[in-house]
Amino acid sequence: MRMSFRFDSRDVKAIQAVVSANRDKSFMRQRVSRNVDGKIPSNTREDYWLIMSMCLLSSQQRSGPRSRISQFLLETPFRLSLNACVEKPDIDSFIQHELENFGGIRFAPKISIQMEANLARLMDGGWDDLEHFADKLIKQRKSPPIPEHYPIEREAARFMQSNFKGFGPKQSRNFWQSCGITRYEFVLDSRVLKWLKNIGFPMPLSPMALGEEDYYCFVSDILRDWCARANVLPCVFDAAIFSSYDLEDWPDDAPVY
Image (cartoon, rainbow, N blue to C red; front, top):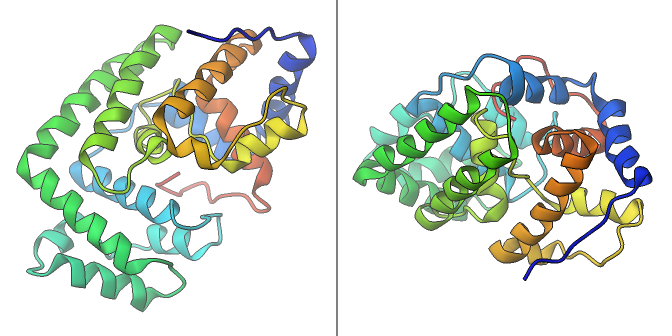
C-alpha cells in the first residue's frame, strides 16, 4: 500500500525558496560540488573510516561549525585515524581516552565500543563489502542523476545498518552522502521535520519514529516525490534545510559534512 500526496504550486515554491535562500552558504556549495556536479571524491579506506567516525559522533550531539564534534573531526591529523586505531592492542580504551581527553564529546564509552566493533567488522571482510557498494554508487554518480538511482542508494544504506554498530536509518544514509556518492536518499532528522511542520505539512511527524526504517522510508518517499515536482535533488534539499538552521557557516575546506 502506498499513500498518495498531491503537491500544489505553494508546496513546490516552499522547497525552491529554502534552496534559493541557502544556495550561497558553504555547506550548500560543498554539497552540490561533492554530490552533484563536481569531481567524484576518491575516497580511501582512511576517508571511509573518518566518515564512519563522523556519523557516530554526530549521532550523539549536534555538530555545527564551531561544535566540539566538528573541531575534533577537523583536527589534523585525525587522532582516531585508521592507522592509529589498528596499531593499538586495546582499541576501545584508546578511542575512549582520546575522546575524553579532547573534551566536550558526549557518550565516549558508547562510541568507543561501537568504533571497535565496526573496525573488527571491516577487518573481517567488511572492507570488501563496503567497497562493493561504493563501486555501485560511484558508477551511478558518474552519470546524470535520475530517480531510478535511489534503490541502490537505499540498498547501500541498509547494508550499513545491518553490519555496523550505531548506524540507524539516518546515519547509514549520512555515511554514503558524506562520501559524495548519493543524491536521492535523504538524511532526515528533527530539523527537516521542524521545517515541514512550519510550512504546514498536513500530517503529524515523529522524530523518534525516524529510527524505524519503514517509517523513515515512508517520509523519504513523500519528500522525494515532492522534490521531483520542484526539480530539486533530495541531497540539495536536505542540505538547504540543515544550512537554514546553522547560525554560522562551515569552513570551505572542511573535509567532512
